Length: 137
Length: 389
Image 1: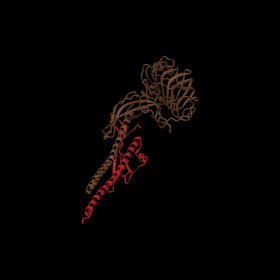
Image 2: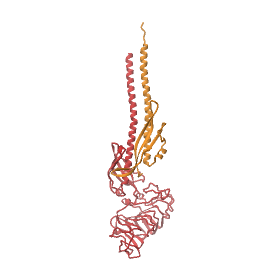
Image 3: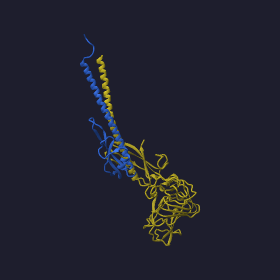
Image 4: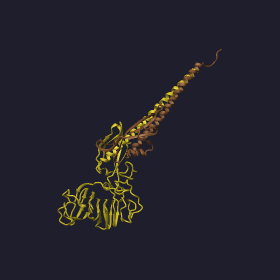
């Protein structure tokens, strides 16, 4: 007598395929979440760095800039989320072109937490920019 | 049937997974694009900063001479170039060019020129406008920059700007520090600084001092406006050595005809003879000295535009003709002024940061020739810019 249905082998294979698909989806979902988190941190740092540039051009010193902005600035590599390390390089005073003039130029570097690695550790990233401000402000 | 259904599920699942991966990649690229955009905006800002510095620094007052200026920051972090700029920019009055709602309000002096800003390999066409403005240029003949003015007039009814609580002028707002003047710390807490004017014309004489050839013991120094042709600047100082020119002397003694290049004796009066026909600007500059300036007398009536500028000299001013109409704008920087009018004296403007005391009737009629404002106003300017549409 023939019975309708699937054999245990068939069921196991189907379950394995479904498990693989669900597992891949889970991995992708985790990556997506991490990526979204990283994107948010990078965007925040980019905007923050741009605000730093604006304040610098207005004539603020580094210490004042880090006090004015609401973010948490630290002097060492950030160890917590939403903390930033901002450093300014030496100030160059002369730019040569057609003639030379006195401007203030510095290289600013911002180190920030860009997200979590898949192993659970933090990932760091730095963003550098050359900032110029006129002495006639 | 079952296998077909299973293949369909696999097919749809593959499409979904592929789309998901693509979305992930796009989101990753988005943050990188955001960083690139941020760097580009910073580079453009750097270029603007460079342009501001170059243009304003290399532009002497009244003689704008910037040509083919450019500068670039290495690493693609910005740059600018200006192909050329007009000269005599302060002569230009443009009612419609640029931002009418600037810090001075209304039209002012504008010089527009084209250039570009660079960010990396990209270059954006950019328009720069150098602007300047003085309250004088706004038709305001009386500008008082602090509260040291006393008894100027109780019935004064002219457009004016003044610090609060000036005796005789009440309920007036303070002059913002952003008016076209330099700010220093001479008067703590509010506006001060040396008022300045732009330089006009050629130097006809310098240092009317160290004189040796006078015949009278006390002479009048006469600045004869009708005899001075062209746009002329006369500089009077009380300490110096020589007169630069030995011809076409405007300085005469009090009897009229004789002219002097060197006078050793005490100057009793400085008499400025009014002109009824000359049209070029006469700029008279009194430079600082420890001694008070000899009394300045405005003779007759005058239709020639005259700029009187005193820096650090106590000054007295009077007129010889009752009801005199004297076309002059006066700028006094750290130069206390006493005015004793004969009848009514009408001038075009007075700008001071020092004390003013008036006996008699002093009235003002705004100077209407805007081209003259270059020489009455501060050599202060600012830069406006925008991407060329």
